[in-house]
Length: 99
Image 1: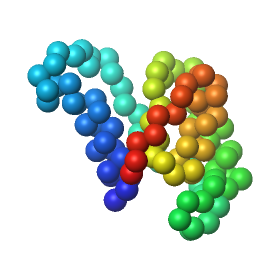
Image 2: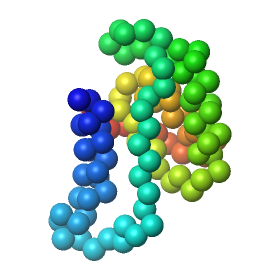
Image 3: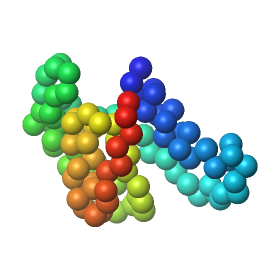
Image 4: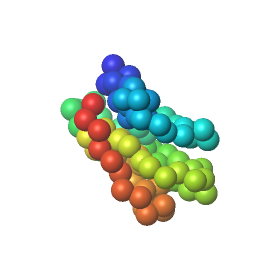
């Protein structure tokens, strides 16, 4: 359910100008949705496991050569840690959206 809400928040972020009657050019905009990598346990806000950290590095390698211009994450450590290698590689800030 939280992932669905995060996706909805991201969609609303991109569609908000249209809903407000503001002109915007969304042609050529691509939104990539990534689920967090493997977590260490089922606690409320766990870190990534070693496998999750490896997957985050792989994500960085896969998307590091693309034209990613913004990164959004929930407030949870596992989601931010999933994006951290990519954010570091691209020198981008991870924007937090409460889930």
